[in-house]
Image (cartoon, rainbow, N blue to C red; front, side):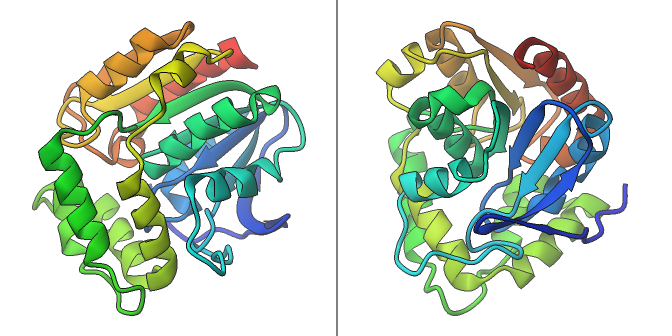
Length: 258
């Protein structure tokens, strides 16, 4: 697949790629990326659904917040543009936002899928992500090699090159603001997961060192309608590197939620 920039629509305060017709599916990317990271999912899901792939605030073509945001700030901004019952799918920080949407705005959400979501980091992992957040000054572009090596290893691929391009062009302040929230949060509360009213999918890669399979399995066990799916040979960027598998799983999940 060629990861080219796509046209946007202005949707409330956010820019978004829109495609297809049918029940609404909202896609939320991770820190430093943009809606194109969902390119393979947009093409597959738009055959049967109305897909809304947002640029989260401070990313892509969406304006950043004027002050340091909270998780609720991101969740609220996206909730404003959900104009009918929707299945929300998020990746990484987007997974955190998607779950928060299902918790805070349950009357709008018919299903939630958290891809590479975090839950109860270890002390070492928490210290590492906080240190990375503290190293961002909001002025200069962060070294993309650090996240790229975590996501892809040293292997060069078109997916890695696309992510590198997006990270280099990311708004430094928008990146810092989002990463700070991502570092400060530690996943949903146990009680919130137990109270989820809708089907919940937790999908991650077997080679994912941070959003581990154990995290997805723990969240799925707590959610009344939760289930975990582990792609054994995938790492962090499974929606790009293992798009066929991810699309198959998401398509099956959407048959339940829509």
